[in-house]
Image (tube, rainbow, N blue to C red; front, side, top):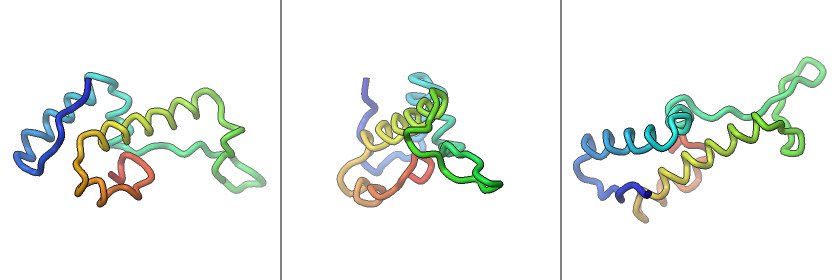
Amino acid sequence: MRPHLFNGSNYSYRKTRMKLFIQTNNYEVWRIITNGSLIPMKRVEGVIIPKEEGEWDNNDSIKIQLNAKAMYTLFCTLGANEYNRISLCNNAKEI
């Protein structure tokens, strides 16, 4: 099921519907949108750096996939004008 396309009007109404749509499909996706996604990190010689993709464990992959689902859901609800404004965002919270 796909959410309705946002046309720029009735923002409060659309916001509530979108929130409920996302929460009912996967509440963890909603948490990624509101709290931001977590980049898998590791400690090397006392410095925390991002993990390489090959170093991700199952939990890291799940977090990355949730961010991708959140971004996809948000992209699907926006028209071309809004897409151009957010196309360079790297995670759902930025969008």
